[in-house]
Image (cartoon, rainbow, N blue to C red; front, side):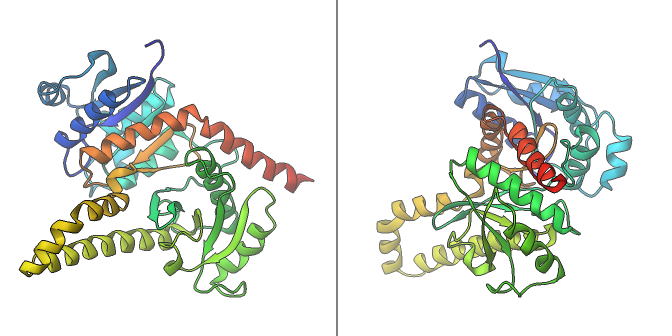
Length: 341
């Protein structure tokens, strides 16, 4: 293979590190021969874990990092002081151009801070948003922002809409993504100060397909493809989405196991049920990209198992192949040119 897509993976980050992280990394390279994984963390720990797997040795490299940034550590201080951590060393490789992307299940705060401080923003990007995919009845929708910018300004949300449009068009193949702003009603006059000020800006934006407000109950139905909001609102939506999903699955399983009739019925519908539940599993879609940086950063759940880690790595391949950063820069530069005129 002449040229790999090089993805740095934080082997020490997350609740299930390093076991599930390394298992996911091996799964990714065995699934795609174009990716090379650079595992950052304690070398001897990574080497010992890798011994149990069969894989192409050329597709794996270990970058020794002796420190680990813990979940509860203040992120800014951790990034500044733990220079030999798996997160800081990994992001350094992306900054220096030695890797194309960085994936971590570790501290969200450290990943967000490190992305902006170490890798840096693309020209014109005011604030990078964290943007996970949500399963809906009609496919997938991008929630942007869900954790990076709690106190947002209208200009940020306009950029989120443009970045989200680029992502959904090029990664998910939706030709003209529908963009909606989260609101407490469908009427244009509804909303808080941020939504009311942002709404007309989105409406006047020529290069996005803005369809107006979207209420939270309409998101699972797939009424929009790009869900724009500040990180406080987005994080509430994301966590409620995940919580309701897990609760419903448990309730269905309990109901099926509560009687003989339920068990028989459960056995009959099990294949179809598994297909439906698979669509709503976060494992299937990988982590959330932090868009608008000079290099790709993907944040996966702290509780991620190997399947989500694998898919987080694999999504980096298409991000590079589609040249998303260049397209985001071009989209934002159009806004600047329009404002100058």
